[in-house]
Image 1 (cartoon, rainbow, N blue to C red):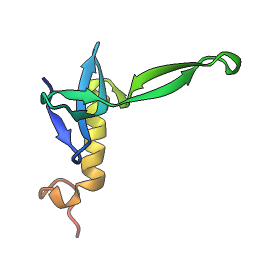
Image 2 (image 1 turned 120 degrees about the vertical axis):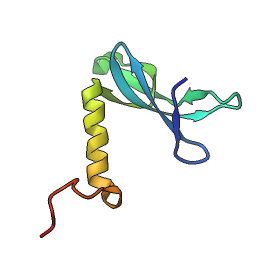
Image 3 (image 1 turned 180 degrees about the horizontal axis):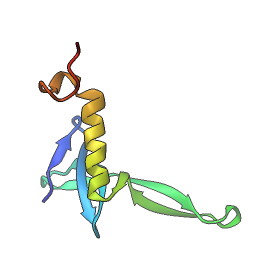
Length: 92
């Protein structure tokens, strides 16, 4: 079982891999301690013949390198207090 990141009492995130493609999936933890994906309804097809389908709520990242690039971007953009000496240019 993959590890989940608890966001709040009702929301968790999990990274899933399917056929070599990675996604960040939103869901919740059930009473049996398993991850349950949240689902949404989307419309597909031409304007005159739309069909509704259910899909898990997720961010498609594609390859592992894209997932890691996203993680690095988040750390760079929002992890300033977590940076170690030498991570970026010397400020003088």
